[in-house]
Picture: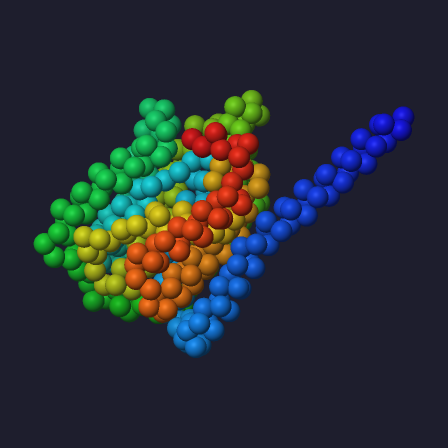
Length: 322
């Protein structure tokens, strides 16, 4: 009887310890964001705070696009084609902006959704790993972008500058974030995503149509990035051959910095999107303001990224990345 009581007491202590560790892990990205803001504000003699409008202007596209990748990673998948989706959708927005601005927005969303469906087909129907499919489509559609915009940028209609206002860009960003939060936290779709990330076989036994959910989430992620392409064109006015270049890396780093488990599952929190995106943009701008070379910036970002992966990676479930 005594040994059983001791075992129960030890189990209780272990659970409390694990709970404290989880609380610290959850708070770490927020603490990191606050610390980075304070440190860089001091190191740049207040210039970081003075450039807050510039930082917010940069974070819109990353925040919107990251929502779709967040859904994909929640179920244990990866997507390296988001930068190419951004580039293609940006070109479509530019081409259609001269006809009608509403049509340009819809065109960008549809272009992104079409590429997402392309990814989803090979991932779900042809049973190819998500990271292999999306790396292939990344290079495929990057080639189309180079072909379309290599000689000169694809210019949008001057009407797009009418939408280059904080209310428009912030309104679209808040709409996407609010919708994503509600879908993820309060709908069956969000529950299914986390269930697939925790274990696809168990999700199938629970009656979840996993193939359908996986296909739809790639279409949705592409559509969200297509919408982000409109915000990108509103800011820049044209699509160059480098449109969307390295966006997929930025989103992956942002999510990991926000505390996102790479393998998805039950520990995923929608707050990872907001905190991680802000942390990445602030960190990147702070390093630029300090006058560091691109090589030094990549080195520092790589070290920080590795540290956060080591902290938030669930080593017991890394093998389920699909």
